[in-house]
Structure formats: C-alpha cells, structure tokens
Image (cartoon, rainbow, N blue to C red; front, side, top):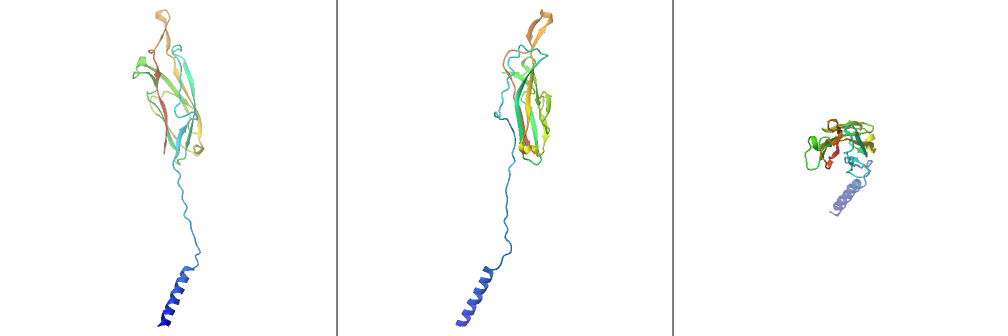
Length: 185
C-alpha cells in the first residue's frame, strides 16, 4: 500500500511539474488607446470679441466703416472634417436696443472671412446661415483666417430741404451677435 501511495504521489508530481514548467513560445500584449474628438474655433483674445463701429451719424449712406475682428483659427481631428456655420441673431442687421429692427431701427452690415482650405467667404450680409463643409489634415494643427465686418453709414442729405442732413435711422445703440459654430462630422 505504501508503494501505491508513493507511485501515485510521484505520478502526480510529474504531471504537475510538466504543466508548470511547460515551455511557452508566445506572449502577447493587447494595447489600446482612444482619441476624443477635438474640433473648435479659437481666437487668442477669447471667445467673445467686441467690434465697435463707433458713431455712424456722420457716415454717408453710400459709404461703409470697416473693422477688423482679428483672426479665427480652426482645428479639428475628425477624419470626416467639420461643418462651419456662421450665423447672425438679427439676420445681418444691427438692431436698435429695445426694438425688433424695422426700417428706422436697423443698420445693414456684412462680414468677410479670409483664409485657405475653404475658410474664405467674400463680403456677405448674414441674412441666413453661411455654412461650409471643411476637411483635410491641415486642420489637425489649425488653419487661420481673418474676420472683418463693414457697416453702412446712415447720414444723408435732403436736397429738397435746403440740403439738410439727416440720418436714416433713429438715435440709439445698435447691436447684433455673430456666432461661428464648428460641428465635427
């Protein structure tokens, strides 16, 4: 009986040692990482830029006042690119404070966006959204263009009233908000 127990123990040890010391010829590591979508429009001075045209009461209706709003830089890592939407709260008009616009309560203006890779937009009154589908590897590191606005003057002369000067709108503060939105595709 002692011999049987000894033989069983030796056999078990041999079995265990064989599997414990078996040679393995392969070891693998499954590596992974994620990169979240990063798409945006940026300006070094912040996310809200003030553009003041000043007093327009001495600017003729046939003239414009142009103001640079600095630059807008776009960066996006979406492989399908992104959609840029430029919109105006008041449909391309500065509205007199406390009103909803209208003939004597609004002043027309236009926007221009320069740049390469599809950023360019000629002078446009933003009566509706201005959309552009943009893509390419250059947007991984950012593409920059300049943004400019111009507003039309409001002063005119009435020839039938001895050349009296007048404005085409009521006195007051006029404003609008233009927003550039970037949406990854």
